[in-house]
Amino acid sequence: MTRDEFNTYCATFPATSHVVQWGNSDVWKVADKVFAICGWADKVDAFTFKVSEIAFEVLQETPGIRPAPYLASRGMKWLQHYAAPGLSDEELRRHIAISYELVSKGLSRKKRIELGIPLEFPHPSD
Image (cartoon, rainbow, N blue to C red; front, side, top):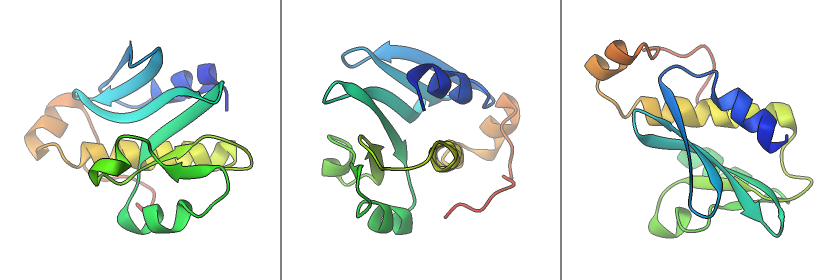
């Protein structure tokens, strides 16, 4: 996935906003809460996303995937796809969608309705 493809995909989710911060990283938020980041790792795009506890334990063993710098060191369940082979573009899109879902579920029901965010998602969370 390229950075442009990442940004185009993240823009498809309801109630999102995009900012460039943290050393020219593309940061995507839902209701001001981060759900996906594309920044640099060793001069290539690296994609960072929130995951479930199970996915965190399993995926961090995949070559090209690691606990997200800064976030995971603070106990948060975030991973970073930073090198090949990592995830396929389809798998990366799925994990970004799950990240959006996980972050959205942290919002109140009232806020989700107000922002037009689904109360239920069509895919499994893990």
